[in-house]
Image (cartoon, rainbow, N blue to C red):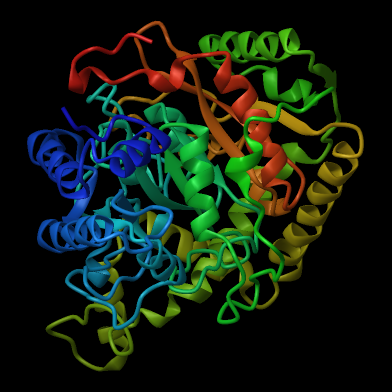
Length: 492
């Protein structure tokens, strides 16, 4: 029976061999969504008709022997922060409810050129502000492994879609951990590329100097396949770096001889869940058995990362979201008395509490008399954090750390505790501040079967090294083969 639980290499092999068709695969994914997504909440929009049309077109072209793209016939789920001409884009917000954009994001163009089947738009924290996907205006997303727990955020819908078998691939965005943390909570692979590796054109901005688009997949090879399609220079994005995109997949089978792994003792200190710590220690043993050398490194300014991030990101959000004023963009209040009330009522009704909180925090940090004390100082600390990593990568190839302090938490636990929600990003934020690539790979489970991810970081534009190191671990373990109880057997 065709399902979306197989890995990308397996599915592509079946498609090429004629063992299945793109339409059969797409129908299987749509049936899984219809059966299970009411409980999971991964999708905000399912594009059934257009997905079938694309799949049928790919099948006809394959039968005719026509050349096809590298993802031909594979369903891909898209985070609802990426604009699409044929599907609504809401960013999980009432502010953009019902809006269908007039153009495609750069990565959407790339996916269409690769003959991927765009199966729908996934749920997210409103304007990507959150760590649980509970801040969505349209309801939470839950991890398929434990439906009373969150999927992580802000790309929770994309991670849950891959974990549940709704799509073999998904696209998300990562501003402070929003790909890696939900990947950990949902037991899939999630990769944040280097800043500038993937164009942000058409990604609705949260914090422009931190946002980055990246892939979700069941395994490292799938993430590498999707990254090859997404990555590359785009002149419409001034931060897009003009450099060749390596053939990531072709290098995965070559282990890194003499791999040097760095660990920061502070990452294993008080506040880290016991099960997470044990999982990481076991993962390091797997690497040691393959000849890797594990050594301690110093990241002295990492303890300031959360404070730094929650000045830089809200400040940029305050600026980026100013356009949603009820006139140029977004929903307008129906009844108001004068321009100021129209602004106030429109934004007050359409934005959720967390978005309002971050806009106010950012506006304050940028205000006259406070800019130097807050935003400017945070940018200086950001530079120090980046320098710490540069020094560390002079002596190690990758850095291993937790993804999050705990496995997925129960729905509602962090909803009214913003500080604890912010601290959930403590291990992922630094990579965004420094512009580094990072990946979360499945590494085990808690005692009650909640997934736990392993985070690897590499130097800027060293995704090839990062993926090869991740593949080394994956070859020695079967965690990525585990399926959630949503679909029956959940044993590793």
